[in-house]
Length: 68
Image: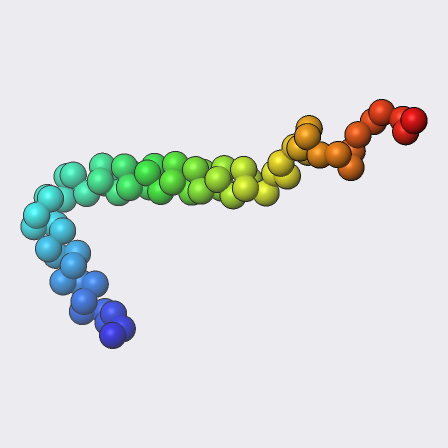
């Protein structure tokens, strides 16, 4: 189902009736700030998963002691 122009018009009218025209800019501002924080957190999570883990100190292949 695709949204048509009259769907959007009805939604806007319902929002204006429910919240009033004075509060709509505040709601839009709060929503924009929330989305900005959400996108920032998602980007940080992606960056954290791309970091390679440190090598395992118990790994015997990276032993720095010379052979006897």
